[in-house]
Amino acid sequence: MRSSRSARAWTRPAIGEQVVALVGGGAYAEVVTAPAVLAINAAAVDPRTAAGFGWVAPTAYDLINTVAGVGHGDSVLIHAAAGGVGTLAGQFAAAAVANLAGGTTFGKSIVRV
Image (cartoon, rainbow, N blue to C red; front, top):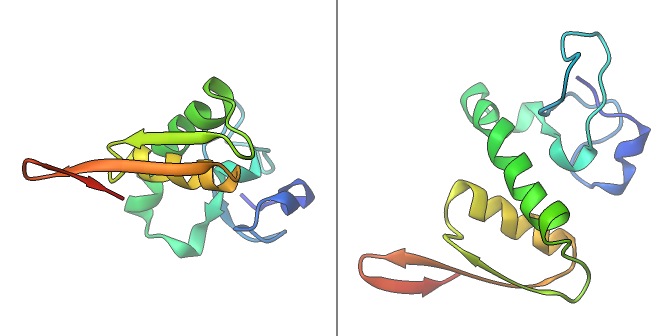
């Protein structure tokens, strides 16, 4: 899949660059569309990492943008911020220009990240 002109708002994939993304029905077509925010540069990750991206990123994206509707200046606290979903949720919240705090555990201590 290659990113399209609609990807301009997102800084990671360049127009025409090969990307990895989770798409709905019709993914076996020659050309498909997906939100640019859910696409990453295919050359930036190995196939194993890219395979995991397909579920972690949409979950994090939906939590921050669809469920919570995080926007500029909102405060966001992410528990388990070092996990797969938590890491990307933090990145999506930061992309929305939110005030961000996260926490994770290290042994029996809570660590602020």
